Image 1: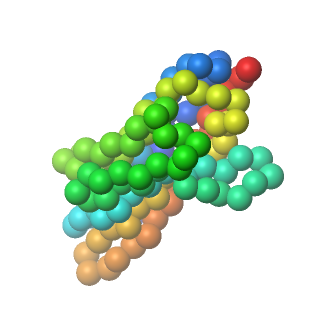
Image 2: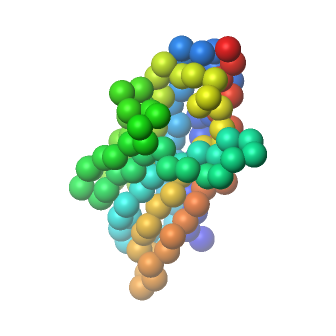
Length: 119
């Protein structure tokens, strides 16, 4: 079974840092685009950062300069380094990936990890 598993969420004070990880497991041939999304209470899920298979990145304006997305293709793992966190960054963070497994193209979501930033 191919799946994405996030880790690294938690409670942090404003101005602090956290690092999220997203590990893909199972029979995976290749992973294409990956990304982090977040959903705050009562709001829709929105994109935070994207990274292509070649390492090109894109960020939401609200996190530019504070968050860094990266990936380790050898480990099938993606990261989100979050610095200078603000209370408005509080949300459930989800990882997303488009990948190939066997002869199938799959679009997967992780289960989500909660990030809470206190003021």
